Length: 120
Image (cartoon, rainbow, N blue to C red; front, side):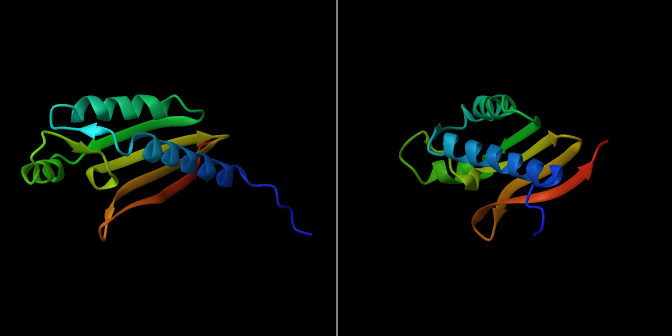
């Protein structure tokens, strides 16, 4: 029977997935305006960076998308969804660095694994 214990690289990828799940589902629906975009980026980054093995988070709210949404609305704000976000999360787990990204692709906020490398 094959060994079913995850490798360090697999565990690092799992950790990255947890961070993305937390980020997306914790903040989706948050009220968002042009005035609050910068502080929300910082809040998301600092929140996710608190999680174990998280080496870095970069969040960019797409201002052009936000402006277009607000131009068609009678309100001064909208809710945060994946279409407004570009995110990079870096996980460092047991000598393995995992880089993941989320960006819009074909109208969907796609989260994907960019790289896995040995840092030992």
